[in-house]
Length: 119
Image (cartoon, rainbow, N blue to C red):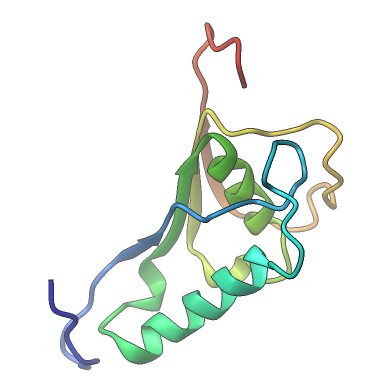
């Protein structure tokens, strides 16, 4: 699909999904030196609306499993306000991950199966 240049008469919704790693350090390969996924996602979320026809009121973050854990981290980060809402499926939400409890208010949905024995 060819990207269209920015236009004031057209709006599109977008979702940022599938980050390479969360850098939470809970699973193999997640601690990557020199990689800052929060910064990359923040840069991307500000670059895309400046480059393409994207309505900034319709930018969401969504993913599953470890990516869902990253979405949760993104929601509570200093740059989480760049997103309208967050959605996670079977998110890897680790109880010892330190986040500022209730420091930010965001719309979030998280679904998880009751028979999930892995996450």
